Image (tube, rainbow, N blue to C red; front, side):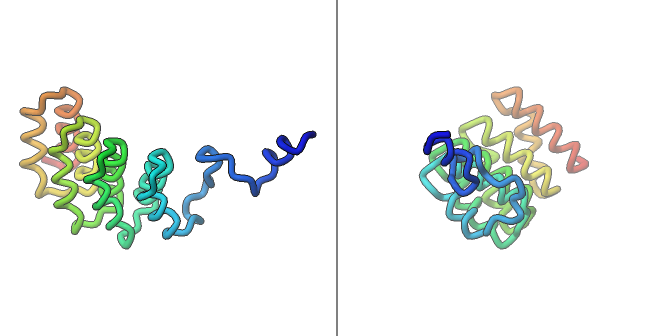
Length: 150
């Protein structure tokens, strides 16, 4: 086996994003938050999703800042993560993403507020369900209203 292939099979060699650890609970939060704001959008999206999966309220500040990122994938993941984290102090940023220009971001924001069970967003969800130009967003808003119980 040549040196290249031997290096590929060594577990200490990083092979890129596909070699991420399967158990995100063992990853240092500082690494995740730094990666979430990095320039590699694929790793950033993965790190933001990890923050949502871990549901750590002390890490909620990073996704709040990322809801205004220029990359729509990052904004969408940040909105989803905020809903999973469930910190009601982040609700204003999440409500703002309900009015994003990108439909995927709006859908993720709907999923976020419905996961949070934020009853104060009912008016926003009703407006989306009735008047959003995208049918997928309308459907997500109706489902979000059902999940919240309105």
